[in-house]
Image (cartoon, rainbow, N blue to C red):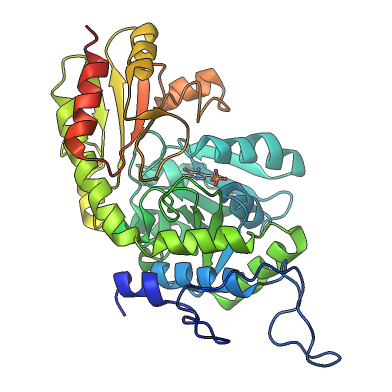
Length: 380
Ligand SMILES: *Cc1c(COP(=O)(O)O)cnc(C)c1O
């Protein structure tokens, strides 16, 4: 079955008991045993839950992986994955990963004996130079947040395989509709389902997709041991969101490209970051490895931080809010919002300046979005 069909039919649907077409929300903590020592497939919802299972199977199939797991948040998914490692292990991570990922690595996991090196993943030699004898994991995010840098997934996997290192791809921005990292050999995919997979800004959630029995067994063990799983109701919301993922992503992209093209001609805009523009550094790689370029556009404004603030305050259709991937357009200021957890000098080193604005281009009429940007850029 093809992507759009899987998004609607993957997993056990209609349900086994009464044939409900909408996946039932099994809002239960525990399950009655059939007999002593014999379950009907489920015993306790931390371990597994039928609603969660349908979501997990769906995400796994969309990514082309072995098994899927649903978590309470994207960060819960990441925290669980990082527990595959042991004190003394070293991780090479992209240097402009999601701010919360950076914080988890740098301010939490480092205290538990993990070592991290952050590098720009656009250059083979640079990645290879970062690898040490104790490197166990390569962590990539493409397109990255908020600069939309593109990582050549095949290249990173090639490096990792030569050194017997596990690769993890955060596929939140692209979604499996545009990019399937497992096809390029990635071992684990992580998601913040909060974003495009759910798509309606009404849930926080995460997911992991595995590619081997060994990883599946270990992630299931960690999820249960750490209790990082998602609730049945949240799983149901994400499942409902995924049913329309394909049509949403197509329209997000169409709107984003129009917004990027508008911004790049604007005199008050210094630079536009969108991988679908042929001026973007990663354009050729993105075109090769992705089916589309996604719905996030960042830009650097000309002028002062005050003019950026004025712009953000004047927006009417775009809401000033963190997060992305929902049907409603959002604008945010990475330096003070999504990436405030990165130290200022580090932020500036990777290119997240005070004049950078990130737009999550939603599904409103694109002319209304462009009109909104125009009136906010040109007050008076
Ligand atoms: C939002 C986000 C996360 C974290 O997910 P939460 O659901 O907010 O915990 C991780 N990676 C990326 C790329 C994100 O955008």
